[in-house]
Image (tube, rainbow, N blue to C red; front, side):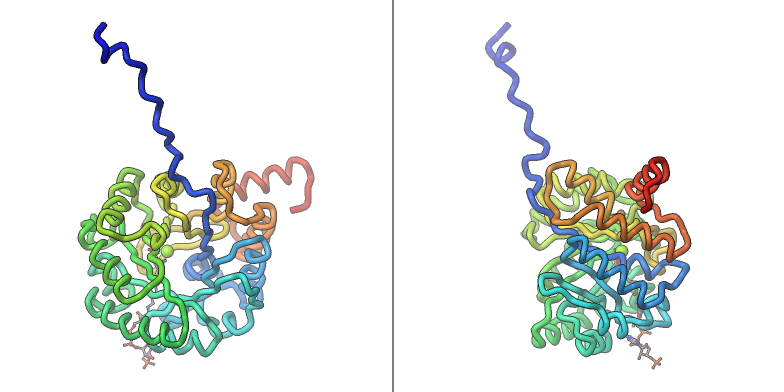
Length: 324
Ligand code: HMG
Ligand code: MG
């Protein structure tokens, strides 16, 4: 045997070296989840939901959307929700806004953070916000400038990062263009959306590495997976291995996008938190507290929610005769 063959094998690289010790959960259920539920949750139940996840330790919540109620009827009570929610000082409450009218409504209702949203694909922008990509960026320039002038923080969503229901594959260059465009406007964080849940782990690695190589900092990136094809947790694992520190999720796995046919719920917050805690990652969230909220929410919506952790928990409670 020559030297090379007899040399001891290099120790395996630790797959989890870059996984952060602390991850921020960004709860989108009250907005992304409820916007696509058949049953419209009454305002007081929405408040119970929001206040419940905050009581369980979630520190970032998207509570509603100041969009046209004819487009998103389930969130027509945005004013009431934003005005009535009991806020805790250490929690960030955000709302989606598509234009100046939305921003004005949100700031009048007491919001200190808003989120603007657009897709990496041209057709999805036309279907979802009735604008071309360039028109959306131009609209948001005014919205973000004004929000920041009012002392508000602005988050940005890029949808259809891994595929568009109308255009299919979306080239990385288009994702990069929209991502850089939103960052240039002054959003503090970009949430990369797998709106229709088509992404798979290698694709996540490709896109995230591509954006990082293009100079976007890890601390500016969040991931937002819909679990349409069951790949969300695998995709999140890859994002964590690359060092991503913010994960969007919806309690119970609620959700979808009414303008993305076939889209289903966001990855469930309980499932993400369970996985993170099992990996030794801190979230500050109490899983029992969280699941107590989602168990009630399923009852209010009159359907079994898709969260795997919730199902296991309810099954366990039924077996041992424990009241949920
Ligand atoms: P438009 O028709 O082009 O708007 O819609 P417009 O400016 O021409 O105004 C038309 C009418 O809408 C006017 O009323 C406006 O006052 C009213 P009229 O004179 O006809 O009575 N209007 C509004 N009303 C209430 N609130 C507003 C507002 N703006 C205008 N803010 C618009 C453009 C963007 C408003 C419309 O397309 C819209 O509301 N779209 C909402 C789409 C949406 O919410 N989609 C779901 C969220 S995106 C998502 O889920 C993806 C994400 O989760 C990430 C991922 O999963 O990848 C974020
Ligand atoms: Mg979404």
